[in-house]
Image (cartoon, rainbow, N blue to C red; front, side, top):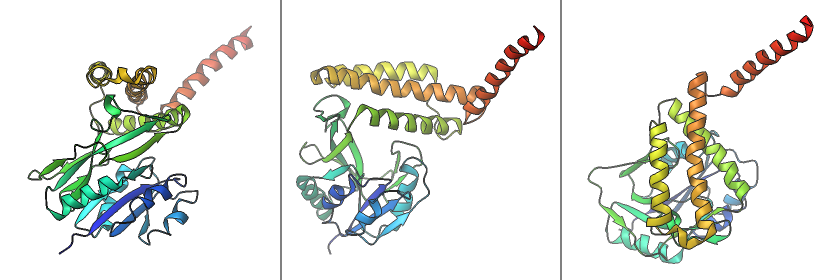
Length: 283
């Protein structure tokens, strides 16, 4: 009996990417698209490829909606793809081989990353370094609501690692530095919010220093990010900057005991301004 394969895609304002993504997975038995109320033509485009389109509250990132999408899937196997990714023909063949021959319960997929118009071949963004848990038998994996795709995998799951670079997802990560900064700002706020609420607890000052040092050594030296030239160095620094911004946002949340410290800081500034202006009244 043929295994049924479901593809899950979560979207928000992805009209520039979604058609190519859907073209690369239209061979699947089922496409489940969960949209966070896009304001562009994402859903309109998707309707040409699937009638299984659902909506989920907008929360700034896809991870909380992944289990919702998973619940809608009826396939024996599930492939998770982001809207800015494509499935190569070689990867399609490999995934079908894994499913048809029951080679595993969960598969790690390499990912080719295009960043600022450059295909990374080294550092943590190279295909065999950036491997993604995206293909699994339904029931063997679920998702946690933390940012950056955290998973629960069954203890007895057989894990298969695809080790050929051409059998990969192709990821168009960032068109511009501005896009990276916008996403960094949004995701670092989510990281800090999760830590403030106790969902994520590994953001500490000591951990920040250790993580930054280990990340730089690993990506730039061990994974040979230096071979990417200036871009490899600068992008590694950007990734470290993300850690620091997340920590600083969390520190302010804790200091002012709110996920929105800006309002309390604004009131403090108003008090300072009031005292300064009162000096003029007394003069």
